[in-house]
Image (cartoon, rainbow, N blue to C red; front, side, top):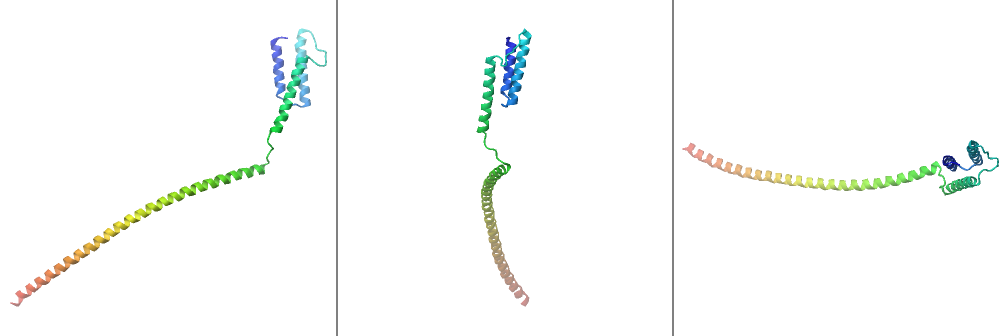
Length: 171
């Protein structure tokens, strides 16, 4: 047999190994391999008349089918049990609830911190305003006292001059 024909057989066996093992599939593949071998042998003039073809190819095909079957069974057994949609929805809801709680806790803590910072700033501004108002009131009181003292001095001066004017008028 030539190398190209042998590669074609190996290629077809590779395709066979990727199929799920079922009786119909196995029979179809075996028939296809037989047809290919008959075609190959037909080109050289000899035909296969035995019910089973070359023993090494049969062993290889059997091993491939068994390997696929065991792999399929192992895959089915190793696969996790399927969850129904309600269980999936419950899992998603639980994760979302946990995430929402964490987000709420984090934002609440951050909000508390910012509110406390704002309270400190407002209190500092109020204290500053109180100082300015107190200084302004002190200035007003000082100005009132100074004005009262000047007014008192002015009234005393006016009274003294008025007495001086009365002296000149009586003469």
